Length: 112
Length: 111
Image (cartoon, rainbow over the protein chains, first blue to last red):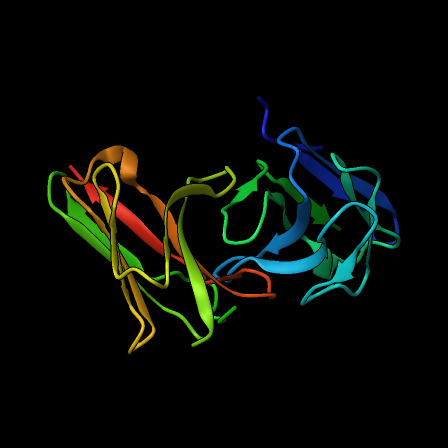
């Protein structure tokens, strides 16, 4: 099993460009999450999908949109990238209540 | 999560010694806790978890202690090895809510 797979691993964008970060999990998990990680800070939740067909805002949703394409895939879109969105982005999935979150390897995004 | 700025707390230990990493959590309703290890350039990796009906849980070379009275969680690593060098952070979860992650502690293992 591959677990949680994120693409791309690295990306450089110019301010105002758009892009989509892809995430797929092969563990048949119900819930999926997008986090950003900034130096010295804990993971902050951007958006999540508790189950296929539903999405909800997290702590820092501004400037992002998501799509839960199917049970396996959960994508994060930046419509107009800003330097403040320079960060490392992690996708995670969870099987059920009170079980651990499995993380992807991350996407390092730089917006110049 | 709590913002401690750009610099993580660092714990330096000699190879072979025991390490204790601490975490103060914020929500008294949290009933599930996890410790993660994150190596440079990688995603967080699950180490061990504990539910609120327990105060101690042991894994291979790791022990998690939970003190609900003071909302404190600790991770003990026995016989610390160079491969243990990483950032360690805790996560808490309350029913119906999402995980909340701490900022982490950097563990540096000295030869």
